[in-house]
Length: 103
Image (cartoon, rainbow, N blue to C red; front, side):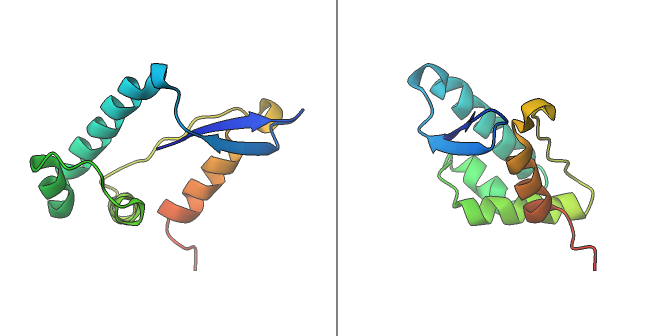
C-alpha cells in the first residue's frame, strides 16, 4: 500500500510514498474491509480472508475486482476532485483496470 500525493498548480504531478504511520491503522482496516467484501463473492479471496493472509498480490486483487465489477456484483469507488484535477489519474487507471473493454 502507498499514499498518492498530487503536486503542481493543477495536481498534474503524482508522487507515491509510503503511507504515514498515523494513517497506517486506518488503511489496514479499510484493506481488511475490502478483502472481506470480496471474500463474500470469491473463493480465492475467501481463502486469503480465512487464513488472515492479507498480503495478496496486487494483480490477483485487481483481477478479482475486475471480475466482480464486470459481473455487476461489486462496484469500486474512487474519489477525487475535478478542481485542480486531484485524483483524476487514479480514477482513469481504475477505468482501465476494472471496467470492460467497450469493443
